[in-house]
Image (cartoon, rainbow, N blue to C red; front, side):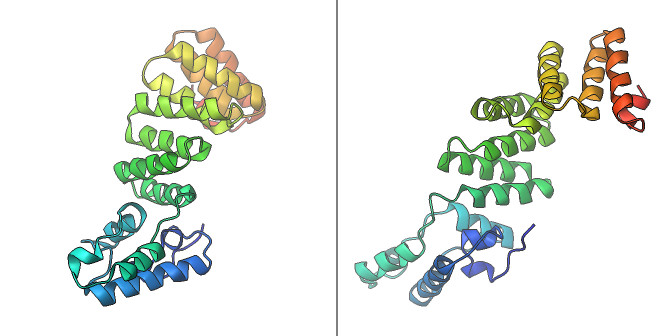
Length: 231
């Protein structure tokens, strides 16, 4: 994974997300410096580093004219252009959301992934990440909705089937879980965890014979698979 390098007050969204940077990053930083020279404060401020980073991603540029009435309109327009956010950079929001998820800041992560989806409505990764954040937060109905959308956009996005099946299990929709986990196994017949997850659902549904078959298959693939060993 990349590491963000730079001074947070002057850091472009791409740079803050440890994404690829080019000359536009320098222009953005210059815009921040010019804004501060004219207004006496950076364009984006906050009570913490995280708050400032989020502002770079999400907040509009404050009005220079409101902070300093004598700033010419042409100067303000030039600064605003330098600080314009790239509307075609959803990957930055995805990376920010993943960072939030890793820190357990699920509400912030969900907001970031939703921003990525706003910019790119068919972003498979953003929908999957959104579902994962809801899943980790324990909001399984919302996770199901996001994973369903992931699969609608890309029916071969395999990781979504695994978590969707588990999410269905969490809300007691065992038949849906079985159907989805079987589909996951169709993609990867030798994935032990998929067979084990299917066995868990069968067991919870009281289908002991089918559960045993699934567990045995998991152990056949991976003799040391713990979930199957202890079920």
